[in-house]
Length: 66
Image (cartoon, rainbow, N blue to C red):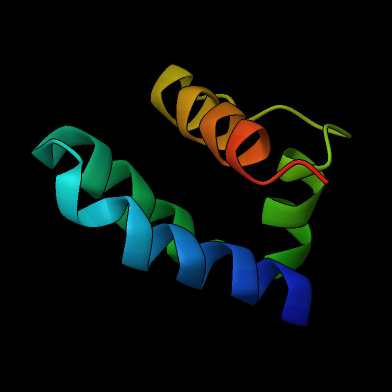
């Protein structure tokens, strides 16, 4: 999913460097998931079980709403 890749690459370049270590770990764990699962979360179709992942997905959604 090219759009998802662009979103995650932009986040990595613009926000990841300033993130705290815990948020960085959550982001790296997110990258290990399958694209359809991440897309479902970002699009609000499903919610991750982990609260830290929920917070990151919400942040991604808010940063890149179009």
